[in-house]
Image (cartoon, rainbow, N blue to C red; front, side, top):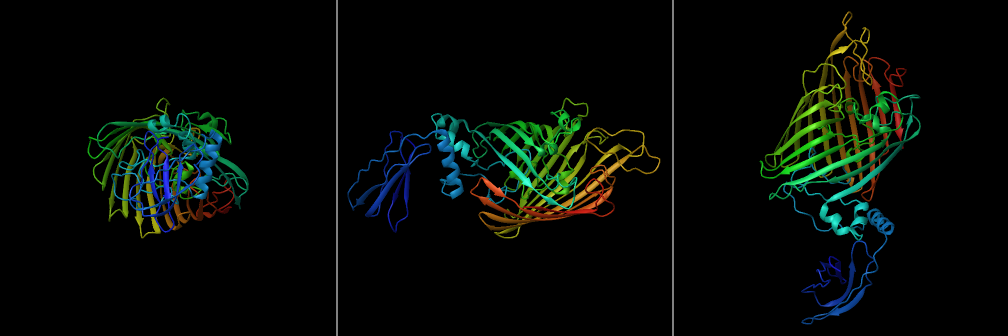
Length: 502
């Protein structure tokens, strides 16, 4: 059997491992004389028995190892999860990369490199091997799956919260339903990530996904099954979330990735999809900014320090075929400095005339990542947004479904509706399986157009993250929210709220 891993173990010596050749043969040269145990393993097969031999100087030893029968799919899947939870999975050698060493460990953190939106990290290898794919790799079509580089995987997320509010936790997100258990999101990904480590040839990728749960309300775009939320006000819903192709051209600059389709709005620290976030709940800043965009985006890697992005979209949270679509420009710059310990990521996102329509936000965003030392880092984001000619809440014009009007000056039918916000995450890595997040967040909804209440907000969150293997994450947290100028929580009946997510 080709590709089996053969391990030679001897007390007091470092284990030696080698892969079998196409005919199943293997050779481990220059073993130190002594007593050895030999064993073979291969994904999808039962391990061989252990064969013991004495190795003497100047003599060859012939060892025959027999793998067990090929396992069934469910047994392979269960074995992959068990190995992950026990931490006994075979990680293999580190693959080559074309960028400096990662500043962070993942896990426990969502990303190992300072992230930017709208593209895979150019020069970073794809090392994600979910248990489902390990089970498929061990099957009769495993070689096809590995060579195709197509992956199918996903996750389930549920929650339970205790809150001082009774009817609604909004504008806290995700857990807008207080004092109850919820199914937040079940997500399936089908994707192929282009190989951006190599510099020889064009490569391509794609991504298709679907989300079901209460979280669909934070991904809904006008024109993509949006009637579930805007017309029917469903508690649970489905959203296709992300559908795009990636075209990778290594000959342009130090690598160019072109993404075409629907993708997550590119600035910022957070994302709607659960594994991409430090904390279970979202900041106020993120709860009211754009969710996803549809269009085309080019990401140009100029060097290990500089990345430039430019794109054209249909504006925020709308399908190109909807009546609210507007040609909108997006541009970002990522600069990494101080030997990779700092990163700045300013963006102009969705720039057009700014005239009011569904989530037509003119967004100016900047994110700063800073690593203090091996175990401490922080992420800070601030944005300013606005829309022009927003209908006044006291005027004759009716806002679009799913949006709020603005608290305009007396006599105005429409007005400019700006808002600004800032959030800071401080992260402490305790060890490879545990970390602590401290989040501080401020939002000034200057005309009430984003939350429905003209007020300033603040929140503080403390969270502990604990991993079981690399597939199960617990994120209990304590969160305190406050509105400074009026009652804006629990449907306008409370000025603040406290939540415990056990």
